[in-house]
Amino acid sequence: MSDVAYIDGVAYPINPGESILAFLRRHKGGDHVPTLCDAPNLEPFGSCRVCSVEVALKEDGPSKVMASCHTPVGKGQYIKAHTPRMERLRRNLVEMVLTTYDTEKLKTEDHGRNELYNVVKQTGFDIDSVRYPKGAMPLDFIGKEAAFAQDRSHPYMVSDLSSCIHCFRCVRACDEVQGEQVLTMAGRGFNSYIAKGTAESFMASDYVICGDRAQACPTSAITDVLRSKENVPDRVVRTL
Image (cartoon, rainbow, N blue to C red; front, side):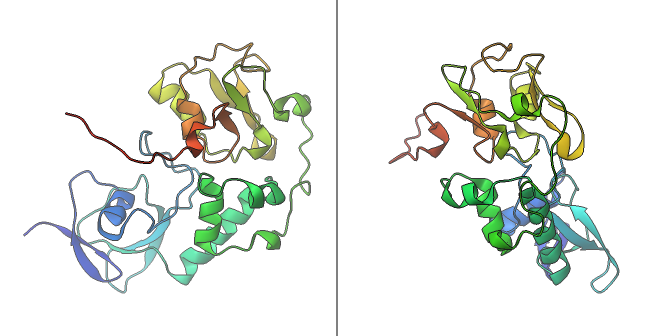
């Protein structure tokens, strides 16, 4: 008999080297646990903590909160993803993200392609109930206007970093997929922002046109001019 772990008290077989998130998705579906910083073509990062679950070694034993994306699933673990404690944690994490995001803009964006909106809805958080709305925590570093200004200098790429949620997915795609390391995160805390190398625009930077950064972005902070992420194919044909 294969090794098992438990989801809400029910035993399921585990695969060697599998993360808790992959384990949950394999048995409960891709939407069982929401994520923001996770992407299928990137290494687990664990920065958003939205995917956190409770893990115990006994059925009714003490549990720890762990980020499921980079925590390996283990034999005999008891995993709970939707306890009141976890639901409250996710709502608080989503609210923290929304303190620097234009919630009015979020209401009008393409919801099918804005992962933040989907996570907000999945957690049940009321967008209008943010206790610290955008502007309550001022970004006061030198050069913030240039850092957050919409950048349309490039013929193919557009950035609007006022929609950035600091998930690092574009930075990681730049590093892990393309190996370019052009994008990086500058500053700290609420004053952090995506820097395009030493340049202030895509056009002036060493950016290589690839589309991976735009595809990685869960919001509209980085997009391509064709908005290809919003295009849904009529059909998919697989060739051998």
